Amino acid sequence: MKTLKNWTLYQQAAHFVELKVEDRHFLRIYVIEEGLMRVLLKRDGQLALNRTWSIAPGQDVPWWQGRDREALDGFSLPDFKVVHDAQQVQIRTCRLRVTVHQPLCLSWEQFDGADWQPLAADRHTGAYLLNVHGDGVEHYQRRQPQDRVYGLGEKSGDLNRANRRFEMHNLDAMGYNAASTDPLYKHIPFTLTQRGGVSFGLFMTISAAAGSILATNWITTICLIAAIGPRPAILITT
Image 1 (cartoon, rainbow, N blue to C red):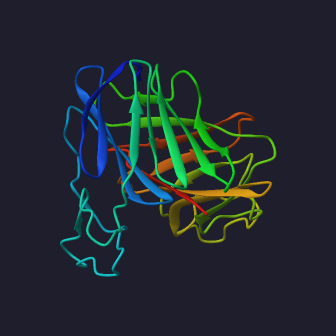
Image 2 (tube, rainbow, N blue to C red; image 1 turned 90 degrees about the vertical axis):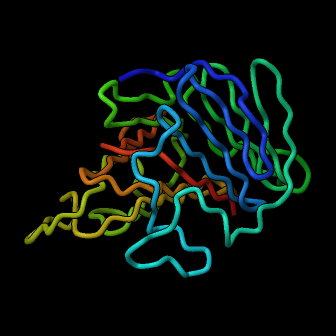
């Protein structure tokens, strides 16, 4: 795997900010709602699949054709502010703020009415990695020991998914163990993390044929692995 480290600010558009990474890849951060942003990594400026069937703000995705992966219709697309220098870019709305650091890693904060509070963060080094063969991507986020992680669809074991490893791949697991078998029949690549009075959601809009793996079995790291395709993700704050 090749670690993505160096980036420069490439452009600021009406609804997104784009970084050029390692002089060949592009990372876009879309601001689509006051508390909703989308991160899209394009290998060599291209998407392996330019359609999606999981984003439907108007409940109107054509069942066969799908929706353009970069389409923004159906979202309010609020104004946002950008502050940047050579070492970081900061994008914020009135509710959500993301800072891109050197080497490449993202940290997220939410406004509680008085001040900005930490929400989520990538690990400081090696946050984003690409398979040199062009068929995989990994993303590592830091987590706190007190985090409770929910979601992922049909999974065995406790509702709190923390401290476990899951494979995101549909499988007809007849006669499975309700405490430990994985994968099961229907996965949904969405997690809801709750920590004290703060919660946030992370939705991975991927449909890789080989599935993806979300691992939470390390004390300080969540690893999100897609077997093929791009790594678009949507972070939601409540």
